[in-house]
Length: 170
Image (tube, rainbow, N blue to C red; front, side, top):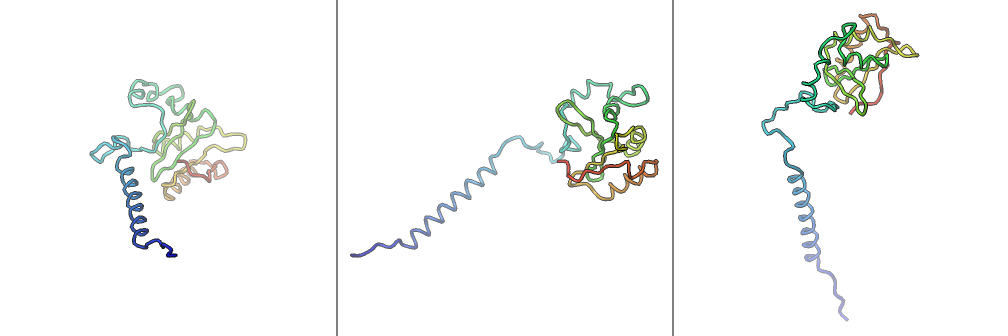
């Protein structure tokens, strides 16, 4: 009896055809994964696209109380940020963002370092004496962290009153 052996050329051609189909399917998925994912002009209208927010620009325009000063010279956002007696600051590259606790999600607002230092002075602190919690994104620069810590130290906030979270914030 003559046994039939698979021909190398046929199996190689089938494998190559299967590989081409898989690669074509992956390219099609990458190409057609969704329309409207960008603005088209290369510029973003949001300076911090990775910032977690629950409010649209229309909502922000309707809330003048967030920019007006309330009792004690604090805005409504600053009062919310200090409501837990601990001020949370997120460092993203060279930018500083103030954490504003919300009902369902947390909002991070860009804030100048001088204002953050003033708010840190007003923070009462928790039962452990922590007045400032420092959060970081993976893109946080060590120089920005050192500038913040030295500004807080110059304001009289001791290193023992700082807590730096070891995990990164997405």
